[in-house]
Image 1 (cartoon, one colour):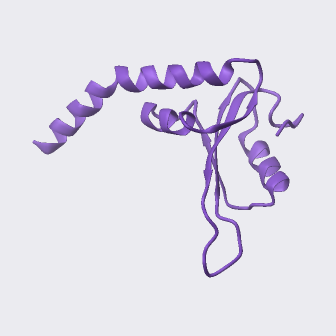
Image 2: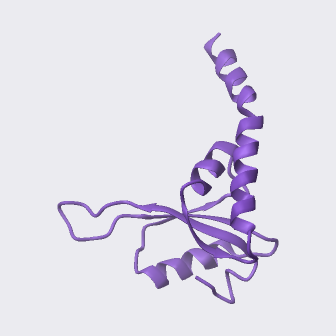
Length: 117
């Protein structure tokens, strides 16, 4: 997945799953990819590279640096790492995502209680 244009500033990228092909067609399902960028990275360039590399046009690309804590944890934990700029980037991102989700759980619970009133 290394591309001089789009992945040069990527800290890590992961693939959670690829949906199963439809029973009616032989087309592959979509490809879900999460990425944590370093400054100056090109999200659209990476998306284009993934489409060319995989041949799958339905790529769901999530910028995990902008995602909320629950999405970030779901995308990183149990996923398959595709790329790490440095050894350990992916493990650190997973641990940080789990801790952030746990630390902010009370805020999500409070939001739900306030919406229920």
